[in-house]
Length: 196
Image 1: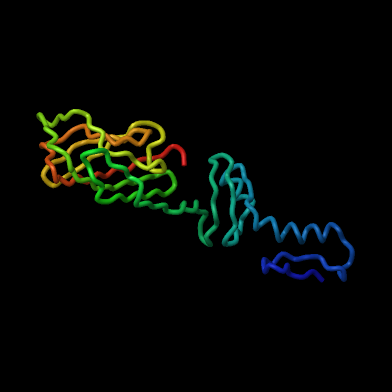
Image 2: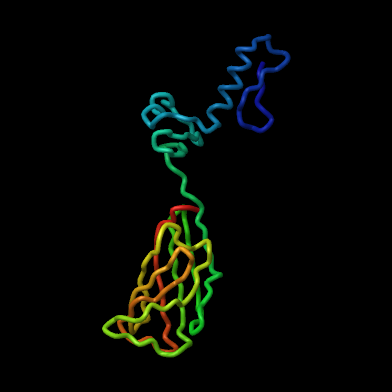
């Protein structure tokens, strides 16, 4: 009589005391292992036609949508990627200091929140315009990957726009007011990375 595998996965292993039958031994092994592997299907409908009573923990790959999914006991779901976070590596240019940096990424979605203080001279604003000014460099793992992206900053007394280049350079573009020494600017931006 076949016996459970030693790893507790309910895979039935043909025993030497069982009647010789290569087809039965192979079938018992296949029936135990295949449901525990990543099963490939052309589409969700093909999977539904084959797996009429899925078991919690079954995993599948759908070829038409390039999607990995797991049966959670009531539905096929795509598992969420692990949340990655960071708080170091933002490098200020002369005339600026970093108060804090928070980066969060889940899958390709990246959210950055950082706080810089102006330690240099006044940056003059003329009707919201300032000369483009590089203020810091973003850590490599938090940079945009496809193109320059733009975001907004706020100081409580002024606001404006900035951009981050793929090389990590953070550039101030606009300011509603002059930016004086001691001004604290908070920057927020969320974007999609095209590569990990």
